[in-house]
Length: 241
Image 1: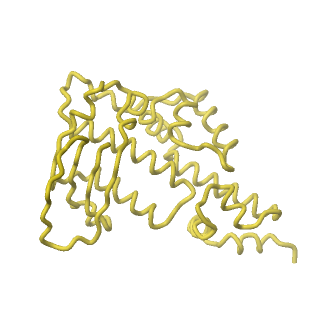
Image 2: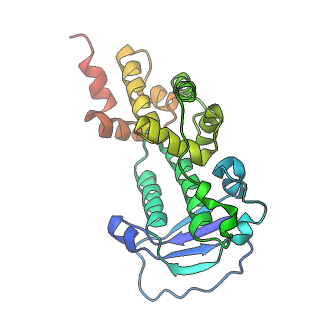
Image 3: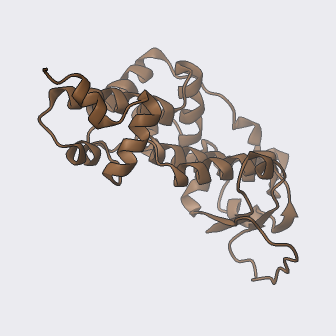
């Protein structure tokens, strides 16, 4: 398990946040922090995130061992990933799980590319764009539409439907659609929520659960952010007068 520790609270701090990278097997070290930290975020990556199935290239069993222990360094991309995770934790969205999984894949790729001791012979340049043809894209879209309610909408599953690695799928989907998988799913979940609200035969809580929100309050926040109305207000606007 790989651990990263960074202080992140907003975009300004994210751009200059201090990061520690602690690969598996590293000895615990004592870190003296003289100044107060606004916030500290721990991110843990399981070993499977560094597999060929995830990254699209076989970096071998030495992948995790190649990661270097680093302290007090800066990496704008890693900091931005941390900021996105904190933002999702503060305000859950309809595509939060997909967002977290996409960020995990991107983080693993970044660590392999910029913070490992792998030689250039490993050809990390393969971590690049790979196309998503119309046939594969259609399969993915149909799967998403069929699983908006309580479905298994994960990056791993969508990548499998597309027959791509998780890293390549996330990039290829955005290149083909113009939205990341979590943005696409978030938009479609909100549109499906509108259909369920207009139908009027389910409570707001039942709809929230069906669309994989952890609570009705989180569903309400996400719906209001996306539409400018609460679910109750939206339903009332279609009620017969």
